[in-house]
Length: 144
Image (cartoon, rainbow, N blue to C red; front, side, top):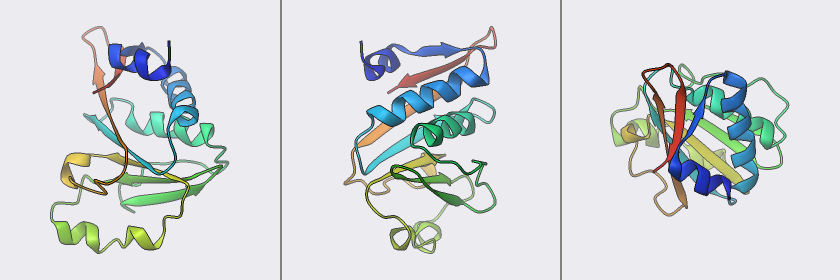
C-alpha cells in the first residue's frame, strides 16, 4: 500500500517523531513542482510535519514556523517553500511576496492556512492534507 493510500484512510500519530516520519516519507513520494496544502488548527502538527518533509528532501537547516516571515525557503534535493498564510487576507498580500522570484524547480510548496491564499498556483498538482486531533489526543493526518 502506498503512502497516498494510507493517507486517504487517515494515519494516527501519538508522537511528534511519528508526524515527522510521515513528512519524510511523503517527501519522497511527491512529484516535483507541487503544492501541499496543510489544513488544521493550531497545534495539530503542521509545522512538525514540515520538519519531516524538509528532512526527507535533505534539508540540513533548522526548520521553524514562518509565521512572522510569511515564508521560508529551504534547499535540499528539491527546494521547499514553507508558507504560513495565516496573516494573508487580500490577493495583494500574496502578490507583494513575489514568491515566483524566489522559487526554482524542482520544488515543493507547503502552505499552512491555504484557505487564505486560494487559489494559489492552481496550475500545480495539489495535495490537500487535513491535520486533526482526536478526542484521545492522537493526531491524525488524512489526504483529502
